[in-house]
Amino acid sequence: MAASLSAARVLLARAVVQNAARSFQSSQVRMIQTTLPALKAETMKQVDVDELEVQKRLGHTSMNFVRKAEKKNKARAKMHRFYRRTDWMIAAFCFALVISIYSYTMFAIKQETFLDDFDMPEEIDRTEPENK
Image (cartoon, rainbow, N blue to C red; front, side, top):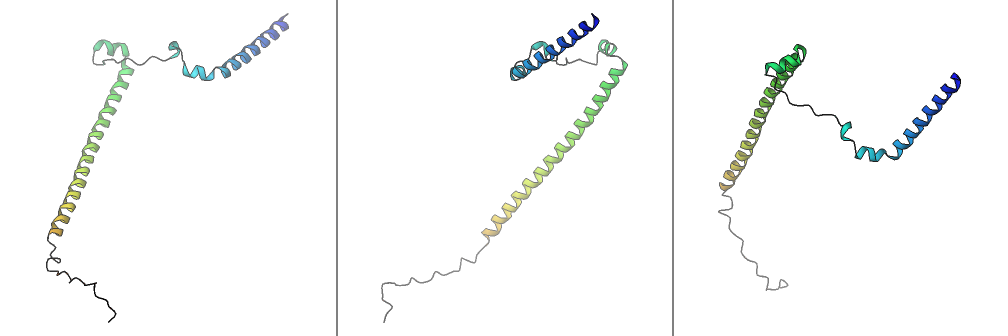
């Protein structure tokens, strides 16, 4: 009797696995598109860790992690400000360089006088035949 029960359990388990595999293959795309709201993970709620009640509820270890994260975030923000300021300085230098090169080019072209004393050549009379 025990052997027939274990054989029945094995057959039942195989049937369940095969049925699950068939249903997964047929509804794989549908399942990806429509997930149940109960299966979705909850988003983390924002907590104000400055309150004593919240600090007691979180505990010493969690508060140490919060302080460490705040310290890292402050250092990251400081580096972001430094790089942002550096980027603005580089952009201002490049813009000033372009404006100065353009201004110098316009100034240098206005000083050119080599065409001022250039005499236009006389018109060639093309009405006369050249076969004389």
